[in-house]
Length: 173
Ligand SMILES: *[C@@H]1O[C@H](CO)[C@@H](O)[C@H](O)[C@H]1NC(C)=O
Ligand SMILES: *[C@@H]1O[C@H](CO)[C@@H](O)[C@H](O)[C@H]1NC(C)=O
Ligand SMILES: *[C@@H]1O[C@H](CO)[C@@H](O)[C@H](O)[C@H]1NC(C)=O
Image (tube, rainbow, N blue to C red; front, side):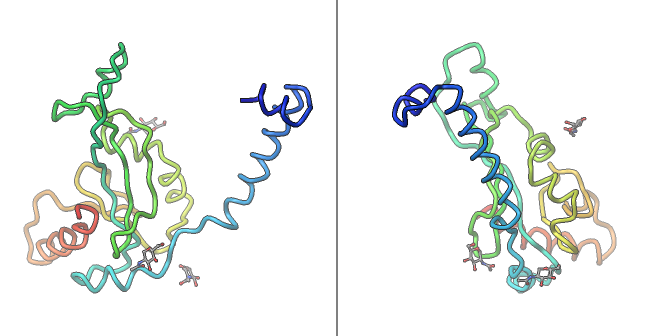
């Protein structure tokens, strides 16, 4: 790429490389000004089943691919036995994707993908404010990511799980 770009604008490959790097960094610095997590979805999520302060629902989904046909191929075989990319997605209450990570082979666990995502880093930095994501029990329970209770006992716990499931259904859809 650098060879043809350098040739096209008539500079050395080294200069082209520096320019691409400088411009990329300049664009990346603008990220916080232009890329914002949406804020106004809480009410819509609340309307589903009364779950407050929900920013989004998160899950992983396996997107079928052809076998990569190499010695890394097996990494792409998921627990259901087919080759895939495990894609992490967050949606809002209108089922619109808000965040997508599509760079992990099918054998990767949802929790690992989340763990390495910029989204987790943002959450740790408090980008969600007093809001949270809803995820299934494949995710770790965090102040910014609520998961279902495994053994709900009291009526309150059961209501929590019911509201959680109904609201998280957005990402299943
Ligand atoms: C979901 O996101 C889309 C696109 O960002 C936006 O147009 C829509 O209003 C959002 N829905 C809700 C309920 O926030
Ligand atoms: C999350 O990532 C950190 C650093 O990359 C690692 O030390 C930790 O074991 C990971 N945890 C999980 C559950 O993958
Ligand atoms: C988003 O949330 C922050 C704090 O949680 C608040 O100050 C801000 O006004 C909100 N923005 C919108 C568009 O609701």
